[in-house]
Amino acid sequence: PGMQVMGSGTASSADREVSVVSKVFPNILSSALCSITAPCSVLNGIKQLNPNEHAAILYWGEYKGTMTDPGLYYLNPCGLQMWKISTKTQTLQLKDIKVLDARGNPVVISGVVTFAGTSAKKATIDVDHPWPGSGGGGKESFLELQAAAVLKRVASRFPYEAPEGKPSLQSEGGNISSELRQLLQEKVAITGACIHSFDLVDLSYAPEIAQVMLVRQQAEALVDARRVIVSAAVDMTKDAVGSLRSSGEPMDEQTCKQVTTNLLTVICSGAAATPTVTMNS
Image (cartoon, rainbow, N blue to C red):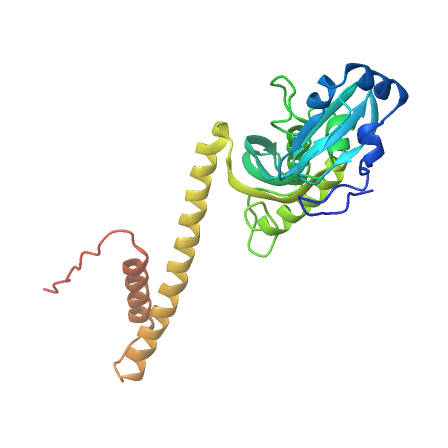
């Protein structure tokens, strides 16, 4: 099931609050060691939790709860592990992800994911390296890999471009972003991340076919322009011939054809027309 969207400062339902007793007397072994090593253990047990931080508390490897309220605390230091996460809103940039669109053309897409951590338990115990900046020794995080997979899955269902009125990567940016956010939230719910948005910021053909596609686009634009010119030329010729006939000028069929041919040639020509005058001897 998908994780419920929560504010960045709200703990996930998977986390439980650490009780006062658990902080000072988590178990018999920690309590005994603390009493033996006092007062040194008292100083070592003072811990600080900053704003926009959550901390999972473990004693001897056993999860005891999560601290969510900033402040200064005393925790029994014997056997203590305190694993913190940031709940600040963060961004993840996916740069130049290559995807095959619905027509099999390779396209390059870049996106930005906006997210925030909500569960210290999930991010530190349930998942290894949940998002960038959470450790992991330089390897890609769980969030990065899932975001790239979701982006490829959704983008592959749409063509790069399509006729007007049909969906494409160029025209469906808002709907695609909404679907990307929803699918990614389902994938990373196990990490405790709350996905706020998943936006496409750049879209282009892959370099290996970019030049070919540019030539095709130029050819299509030229054809469309010529279609408009020819349609306008026909209308202008009809109006001109109709005006000549309505003015009372005598025009036989041969003259009408010649006027029509000359007008269409002049209007549709890509070069300037050179007028000629026929001299009858």
